[in-house]
Image 1: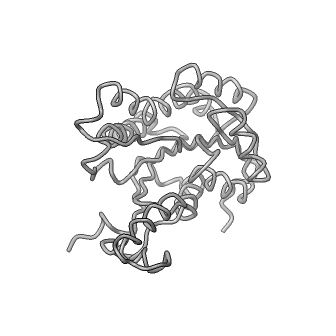
Image 2 (image 1 turned 45 degrees about the horizontal axis):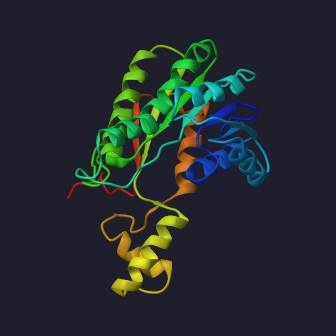
Amino acid sequence: MDLALNNKNALVTGSHRGTGQIIAKTLLGEGARVLVHGMTEEQAKEAVATLGGGTPVWGDIVSAEGAGQLLEQCEAFDIPILINNFGAADAGNWQSQDEAAWLLAYQKNVLSAQRLIAAMLPAMSTMPWARIINLGTVGSTSPNARMPGYYAAKGAMANMTIGLAKEVAGSNIRVNLVSPGMIHTPEVEQNYMRMAAQRGWGDTWEEVEAHVAKDIPIRRISRREEVAALVAFLCSPMADAIHGQNIRIDGGQLGIVD
């Protein structure tokens, strides 16, 4: 399927690693021109070398100063696609996370996106079409007890996304939230393999994943490539009728009611 993204400029925050880098790779494969973002210049340039394409841009978007640094580099491009992938969770619970930790979670997971949206929205409104896609988590509506600041911030991002979609209603801009469940990453696999050794779940990932995903209807956890494919489709002009949605990609864990 041709997603009609050839030569379209896309900024993917936090694309120097992880799911963001897979999103960047997927968009590059669709012919898009991807601005590959790292928090530092070194991260961005290393990611571009790994991807074999893209334009490195950088700035620590946890702060207004870092966001400004990134936006200054983006001024040379017309960018109809903004993917706010960057976000971060810090370990902790209600007893260990103080007010500073909650404020930092908000900076990382809400204002890092809000700053870029506010700055880029005026130019986007003049383009034939534009896309803003935020990356959330199913935990924004079904949080765990741990990392309360992170889940509260992601809940705010979900609320912000829907409010923004209403703000731009009737325009050329489409706004959506993609909310993954657990994603298979090297770190996730390593953590569960260590747990499996203690619990006797098996020696291979295939054996261990069956235990990890026992409560997920598809009996496995989502892949980064699947999240990236969904994001890429939402970027496409073919997704023009999808707006103001919180789309879960969690293997049906929260979507099936017995």
